[in-house]
Image (cartoon, rainbow, N blue to C red; front, side, top):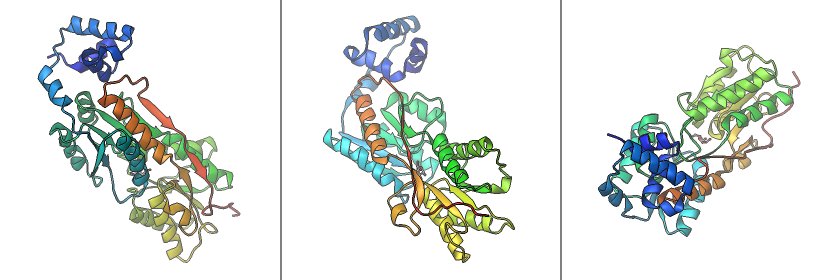
Amino acid sequence: MVSIKDVAQKANVSTATVSRVISKPEAVKEETSKKVLKAIQELNYQPNVLARQLRRLETKTILVIVPDITNTFFSKVLRGIESVAVSNGYKVILGDAGNDVEREEEYLNVLRQKQADGIVMLTARMETGVIEKFSVDYPLVLACEYIEGSTIPTVSIDNVSSARKATEYLIALGHEKIGTITGPLNVVLGKDRLKGYTQAMARHNLSVEPFLVQEGTFTFDSGYNMMMKFLALSNPPTAVFAANDEMAFGAVKAVKSRGLRVPEDVSVIGFDDIEFSAIFEPPLTTISQPTFEIGTKAMELLLKLMNEDEITRNQYILEDSLIERDSCTRNNA
Ligand code: RIB
């Protein structure tokens, strides 16, 4: 049977655009409309009218799924989402996937059961096919995490260049033996932040020995454990890039537990700039993500999808910045 995806592919537009041409043609440019109608005719596409009407029943509620509610990074993103949602008459409900892909997928039923009109996912760990198919039928925006090559509207920073920037900061301080505590390497953010680290090391002709890369889970405990591994080496790294602040805190605790000092003995840079980073001891040098703006932009895009308005861009990459505090210093070795 011909699907909306086939029409979108043939007309070279997104499925959301096809949907708009059918239900709200006045919101689409004439030229785009013509392309889509031609594809519909050629493929003899028959939209499911009943399903469309069912989807139009409004709850004025949206669902946000976070990968891990214990990471305070997500609270400011939620603030951003909520501020736009509330001023547009929407309530926000929250789902915590607890880093569990099955739970993440189960939350999609909230929309299938018509308990929410749209969804912002701050995690994208389920099978690409499942999430892509879901986005054809329901308004969905990804934020923070993303799927490479997807047309699902997405808001994030450029994690590769941000991680490169963090690593190059350590290199500029004269460090050569730099370790990294990565995020989970089956998650796009884990992979991309490792890529940024590797690129920076390669650009400066610094070798990445396998023992310099330790895989964490984006949690405090994993930061602690992986730093303990570094400290057990006969010649440990003089600086460490932790792929998020939670892990950086764990890493600092490990250094202190061995009677060593941050940054005098080991420099540590984090990623996220969560609120606690500024009051931690030592205050953490880190990459700051525009969390509130990520949330507001994601919600604005979701509103457009729910109203079947035209979305001119699918990918929004927002600017990060490096916040210099006291957890890194020059390498004098
Ligand atoms: O879920 C872990 C990470 O994803 C957070 O620390 C933050 O960086 C987010 O993008």
